[in-house]
Amino acid sequence: MSTAFYTKLTAAGVNAMTRAVMNNEPISITEMAVGDGGGNNINPDGMQGLVNEVYRAPLNRLVIADLDRNVIRAEMLMMPQVGGWWLREAALFDDRGICLAVASLPPSYKPLLEQGAGRMSTVNIYITVNNIADVQLITDPAIILATITEVDKA
Image (cartoon, rainbow, N blue to C red):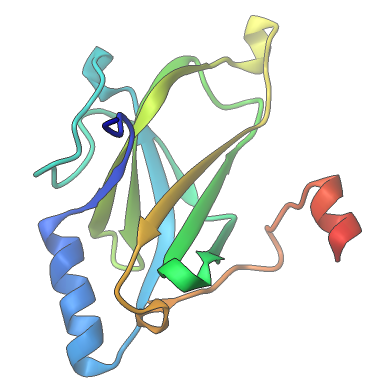
């Protein structure tokens, strides 16, 4: 079975990861953007950015998703006041605005609150790295939102 939706490093992302390993300086992934793919599903292979970016925001969190497999999870929140477009693609950016990775997403409509069906949406990108230490896991405690389940676990 092939994977229909996945994340790939861009050429700049590969270079950044290589520099992180060589110089022992972690990458700071700080933002995520989403796009509508120009009305089509996308294939992240060889992409260096989004086809049609519609929204960008700071990450809500960047955490280790699976320590054994060196998987990190980047999470971005979209409030009910944001939307009116389809989500088909997402990308991760470093603190200099360089696109490090592009992901294909299952098509999903993000309504606006004014359309009568506003909702808070979460977009997660999972990415496997050679060494989790090469990625600076930073979050701004002033903007992190947690689910009730996450608060109960804490």
